[in-house]
Length: 490
Ligand SMILES: *[C@@H]1O[C@H](CO)[C@@H](O)[C@H](O)[C@H]1NC(C)=O
Ligand SMILES: *[C@@H]1O[C@H](CO)[C@@H](O)[C@H](O)[C@H]1NC(C)=O
Ligand SMILES: *[C@@H]1O[C@H](CO)[C@@H](O)[C@H](O)[C@H]1NC(C)=O
Ligand SMILES: *[C@@H]1O[C@H](CO)[C@@H](O)[C@H](O)[C@H]1NC(C)=O
Picture: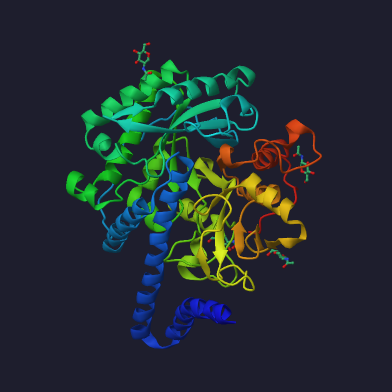
């Protein structure tokens, strides 16, 4: 009971904010101001969380997991960043010249899949030869770094890239992009965007690598422009404009080369971050599409010691204010409202889940108190096959709950609590994408999907591999009729 009342306490903060909001509307502006203040606090708290989890998410995928020390650093920088958010740095967007871009006729559905190059010395990794050539329309090989303003890959990454490109022999329509950056991989971006000469060096290195490896384009994952105080000091706080400038110059270079190379950008979900880092109208003008990272909406940190869903499609009924923005539907509408064209919106779908350690096994609902990461996976991240093997091993011991409002499941057993996606939940997301007429889905990542096919017993072996990615692809591409099940609701 003790822990259960703990749960009530932690809810009560959020609830009292919401109640205050209700009463204040009828009781004048003074109260209103207080409520705004409270809202701001809630917003900032969740904003901090968001930054931390973006960083952690990607560092897990890269081979070096951050030590607790790194996390402290991330949290510190997040605090600095959230200060920027409250000060609302506004600078005019760079003057733009309308550009006639490459043929806009190419509006084919996109299924863009991130493939993380294998780290050294780890066993049981997804090798290039096991990547299915027809699973995705685009494969983003992740992640290259920037060293001395040039794209940098280590030798094993070059080799992997070369092998991935050979998949085009099996599927000539497959596009291969190189992804640059990733969370924790922002080093090199600030010095590179800072002036025209530096950007030119980078663009030259892009051209060389696109040609040498017969790639189809480049995907920029700078997480995130204008994010740190450092940027203010060293570049006059103009990283956002410089990034737009870079996109423009890359596009102009493609046009000059008369080559239909692709230019894509991975962008965050939280609105505060979007406002700091991007001129959405410029993204819309110069990129082929953006991969929106609509996941990591909830993750365990000591500031947010609650269970929560990794990638909900919709909000839960009781969620208000900032909490109500932490879902795919809100994020998509936010980008549409900021002027991003439907045909440029590619919605991120995770193949990994997040784990939590329940404080009280008798209180396993969404939002209940958590004391840390779950035991599955690593640092609160778990790959899909690890979840389904755990469920299989638990027999009737584990409970699976499908949360109707958000269209995602979670499971729990004793103190273990996991938010994850299934072929069903990703199909719901894909149907949403279809019904909204968006460009497609981004999958993060092929590595975290069930690439060995251990989840679906009794299916034809080839058919059982990559069940989540397959479900997305089948829904978006093969089933092109609109009467598929699980209609989105608005
Ligand atoms: C591309 O190939 C040329 C000639 O083989 C080589 O000098 C250059 O270093 C290569 N560039 C990259 C980025 O691999
Ligand atoms: C999706 O978002 C839009 C815009 O914010 C909103 O009008 C709509 O009600 C949302 N749909 C659901 C099911 O929450
Ligand atoms: C699930 O959500 C849909 C859409 O909001 C609703 O129509 C349906 O009644 C819900 N089902 C249950 C069992 O709550
Ligand atoms: C198309 O959707 C139906 C359900 O609406 C499903 O049973 C079928 O397997 C799907 N087809 C493909 C090729 O995915």
